[in-house]
Image (cartoon, rainbow, N blue to C red; front, side):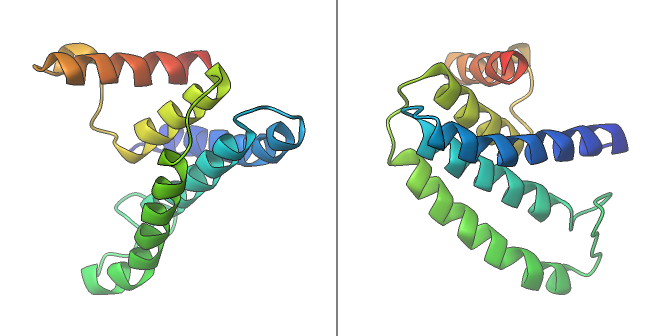
Length: 132
């Protein structure tokens, strides 16, 4: 991940974390889901910051694991909470797509995948992130 993408990701995560509580309070039916996704995204950015090229890079695997394992466990809990919701708005869909794209940077472009299901997921993630 290069510096520009890292900074853009951090800025987007900060914006999402700030907007999510507003969406929840504004009566958006997916407000709680959007807030959970914002928490997930902030955690994922923090997690990634401890790896190569990150702002908090830790080169020793054991030391890094001691810091990142609790974040990974929290991510699993957040993912369970996120997936317990049913998406009812485009804003909710976009929030989940952003979280998926952040967590799985290998999704890439549809033409990079051989399976139809993977191509369609890549398309949904790419386009939802672009319009949100």
